[in-house]
Image 1 (cartoon, rainbow over the protein chains, first blue to last red):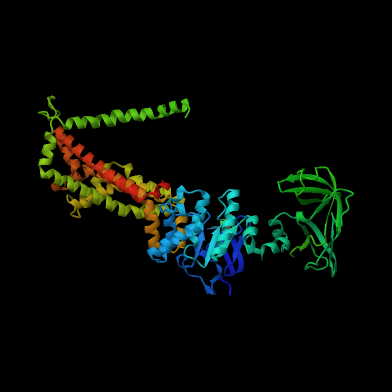
Image 2: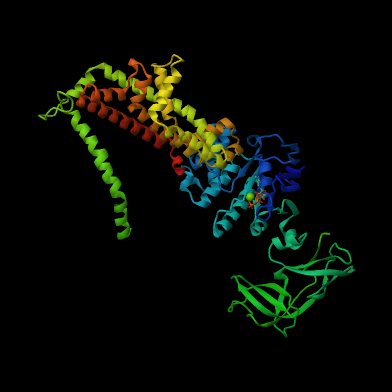
Length: 363
Length: 273
Ligand SMILES: Nc1ncnc2c1ncn2[C@@H]1O[C@H](COP(=O)(O)OP(=O)(O)OP(=O)(O)O)[C@@H](O)[C@H]1O
Ligand SMILES: [Mg+2]
């Protein structure tokens, strides 16, 4: 049985359906992420799980028992708020002791567990500081520690890294993974940063406008997106309009106005005549100088339109003769020059038939 | 700080500093000096010969004065507590109401100031007469509470309005009941508001003479009446001055203790103000 189950949850604010018929099952010990653009209903779902809001339809179950009617203070789960919501009039130790005091834990035990938790988040020397005396990253760790200290069944985190700068964010991502694996508590994490979701999660539910578009592990989401929205939202991708013209055991043959005929293998779940998009990740595209010999299923001649150098990689935009623009990503592994091609250089690009997928449009 | 900034700072602070010096510090010093002199035959002060502590000796020698001081501090404390009990829920309700309605409610709180103070006290005479409460200590406290309530509501509201609702949600999320949420979060964070409201009620009540004079009986006079009497009726300026000095010293001592307690009690709350 799943630890937390959402069954056909719907939440309306006036005419707006903020959450539409969402069903989810989250297993114990999982790092589960709700990912989606701003306003898609992530916070609303989290607030319903925490008990600050109630669904208009559907049910939320914890260990198989409905949470409906259970007030937030009685739910065995805690929230880490985006604003941290640390109590400004209590020290770090006081903040950490609060949930234990609420649970009626004895004084000696509180002191012991607070010490233990402070060590876990590397804040031993900050026990007597007040929140306004801490840096953003330290506050964030206190908030996390306060949520974890009396070992809830579930920890809900609403964009906990949103207020941190990029470098600290990366560092905290590492801390989050370490903490979650160490304490073994189930995390439900909310973010609109896809990179963060991929890096942290066991599973991710991608949301759009109140609905779940796809719920899968990070690598499945990345390599087998369910539709254009997911493909486009997670990472960079080339999306090219195409139609299925033949289905054979070794693959599907597509026709595109700009790429001509191309083969996709293994055959996707689609029918003859289906329209949709051929989706191709930039890092799966190979670039070669004209004349260089390359063994590829698809080959096109084109010109470098622009090159975006970002350090470890360079993102090229290549204009094909048909006018189609294809993005290709190359790792900068060769010593010396930062990039192999300059804008205007003629090149040959291509990819293997397994490199792309076909995403047929929903009818 | 650049030269221009420094000049600007002087330019801005000089007028209020000069004003305070002339109209606040100087009179205060005159009162101090007056308290060490002898009364003139028909009021005012006698020609100066040498400083005397006669006024203070007289004050401390008669228990009546101690009694009036004690009664005044009691009335001030009681008024402050009643104001606090009435103002807290009111301020909280205003702070909780939708933003658009808040300004209107605050306006209602200060609306009484739009009409004359004495007129409003006379209105209370009309109200209390039929209830047989006129000229009793109860009438005095009622009047005091009525006059000073806005001074408690406003600082409390200003404080409560700034509270972050997320803190209460966090407390609830971590297992706190409504009662615990109030005592562990809302109340400690509102202490700065409670302290400033209490000071704004307590201190003026001590000096207020109109309310006891109009609503109280002969036995209900407070320090304010006593001081007023010395200047206007008894024409004993040194005694009036000594009473004022004593009151000021006591209030300052009390404020010092309160500030010290506040600093210890609400260390983290400074983040809020
Ligand atoms: N209390 C409310 N009253 C009315 N509308 C609301 C309320 N709460 C949320 N909404 C609306 O519901 C939708 C989903 O909001 P929600 O806060 O869940 O989005 P989100 O995915 O968390 O976005 P973000 O990434 O910006 O935090 C939004 O359109 C929002 O305006
Ligand atoms: Mg949100």
